[in-house]
Amino acid sequence: MNWRRPTALPALDNGTVRVCPQDWGEIAGSKPGTDATSRGTRWITEHLADGRALGKPVVVEEFGLRIDVGRGIPDTAAALADGAAGDQFWLLTSRVDDGSFYADHDGHRIVWNDGPADPPRTAARLFVDHARAMAGSSAG
Image (cartoon, rainbow, N blue to C red; front, side):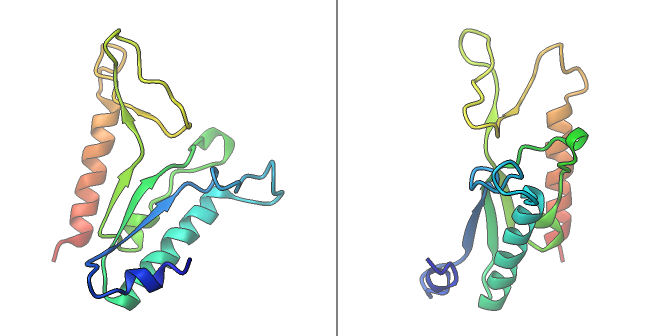
């Protein structure tokens, strides 16, 4: 389906895009030379440009990328750099009733570890820094 066509409808105020390139098979193991980070960044950049052309904000929602800097899969900030109206990652998890962590069913889990094993509140700090950056990019 052409994303621009439904997004251009006058009744819609904004567009949304979902980005999970590794789940789409964009991995070097199945497609030699494939770079999931580049593919996901290109997907975001293209849709944000389409949104600007339509005069509509675009929210990057439910995105996931298995980031492993040690293996050459860096964290990128295409949504911030290319002017997304917002972004919503998938999936923030924490502890369940028995004290264990919610299972990582799809490899996109971000763990909110509020226990002694995470004294610097790493996840919280990342969320606050990202929210400030996104708010600053849309200010003005």
